[in-house]
Image 1 (cartoon, rainbow, N blue to C red):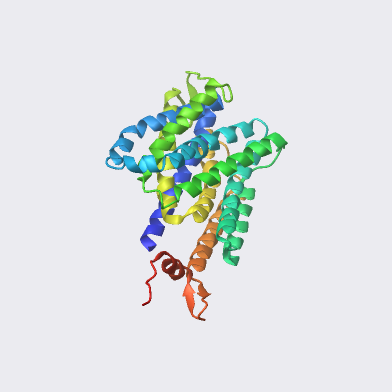
Image 2: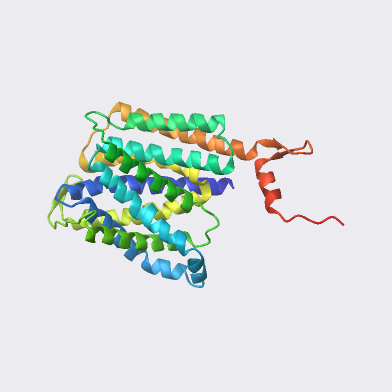
Length: 331
């Protein structure tokens, strides 16, 4: 169990790192004239092609699982992949980057906490609640709100991105889906790429590709370099993400994902020469502290004893096990 939790944290941190670095890389392409539509379509199409062979190999003898879960797979591709990116980039047309990231990054974990609360009728514990507040405070410190602008359309788009992101965490962590993580990701990428193509054709997110050299990490390079890196980082982000979420669950995983904010700041510092402030460094440290509290609260709620009708006390885990085991009939 402990080894699985460690592996889950490592995979989620790798996922958030890849997500974070993809932002500054995409920004470099925007600098030469690429549009959000072209970046989204290239990311998803390229990633789907890279995962095509591994997906087919992983699905040998499992195509029945694809038929049984085709609705979930389709929703995963449209909502959790194409939807997240499309709504976020639409929000950027009306909001500053800092406000859009804040609404998406803070909105998704809160949506998950309240969604699970509504479904399980179980209020988050004190330690978890403190961890939520601490983590979100760290996000506010890392983000720069100077000259931030607000727009109701932008806010709605950013909140829609947060809802799609919450769906990504909830679906990726679902243990009832028996598809291998790499196959589930590959199928979702393919559907997401198709959705991105349709968005371009319908001019919802028009694409424009520019093939010229650009400044990247202090060097003058071809556009192919950041384009390939963006595709590879997208594959890494989603593959490691789904593996990590199946170990950690949606709640803890979504708060680990908040490390994307300081990772993005560090990546922008290295690749785009954007400086880090002491306040941003402090915010990153506070985010990590909040994540520790959320995980602590998760473990505490799983082992907290509950009173039964007979007066005995059971842990949450043993109670769930007794509910899932078949009952014996008494003679």
